[in-house]
Length: 54
Image 1 (cartoon, one colour):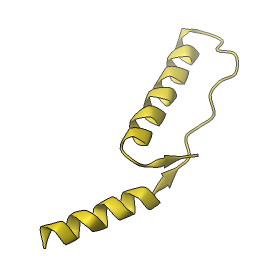
Image 2: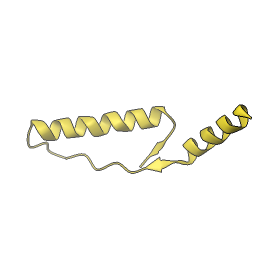
Image 3: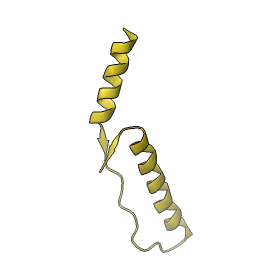
Image 4: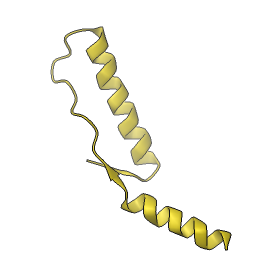
């Protein structure tokens, strides 16, 4: 039963995709640079866990 549940979770994770906000082209301040780094970190983490990022 657990194996069947786990297979369903893995299949759903592969089918899941998310859209992250666009990076700021020219960071105006320290806050914007941190914003870009946060989005890049999210993208890496989601990709590593098998979720598609657009």
